Image 1 (tube, rainbow, N blue to C red):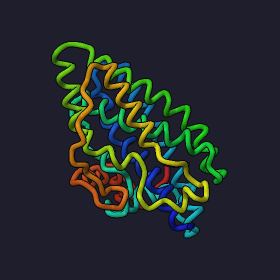
Image 2: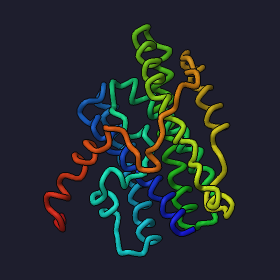
Image 3: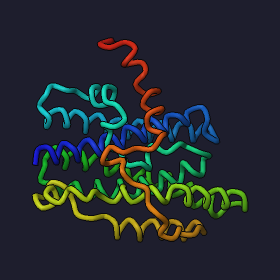
Image 4: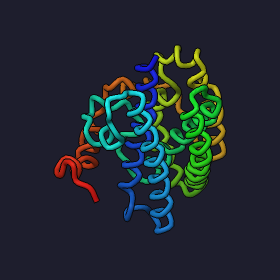
Length: 247
């Protein structure tokens, strides 16, 4: 059970860390200065969540590893994030579609985790739930604005939705966490609620819900796309160039 819980916590920490870095790549490149600030703040929220999760992972593992170890000293095959969050930013509409899919799943996940029998995860969930509700409000608002805007913005929004849809299945839970659910350590399935909520957002945006295309999966088991390794090289470069440095 300890190994299963460690894997679950790392999956959530890796999800938050990788997406945090993707969003940070928008800084100075977002459509407006206000959006630069908004995406930076969301990135920092996710980074904070990742730090708490990695610290807890170190406690569960019991090998003396801290948050920096899990962030900077693992290779791509050791990461357990869903494929969605490692996908390139694309244009702004692609990023927003990715965020809507992620944020809706993350909000449902954290809401369910407030009832966890694990006191550490339940406490983190109470905080992360509030942060994630803001993230979803932001991303859904943008998707509705793009979908209900010009012909060009609607076209790009639909293209973003279609591009990110094949990576959504892994957001809805893992197939090897039944024991954790049975013990109340994690919540139940969020798939039905997620599909209904996302469909509602797409409808309000005037966008089409994609048909069930072939889903791409494997990230939560360590099989990643070609995009993760370059992202980690960028993120880990300073720590690996100066091991043991502090500031």
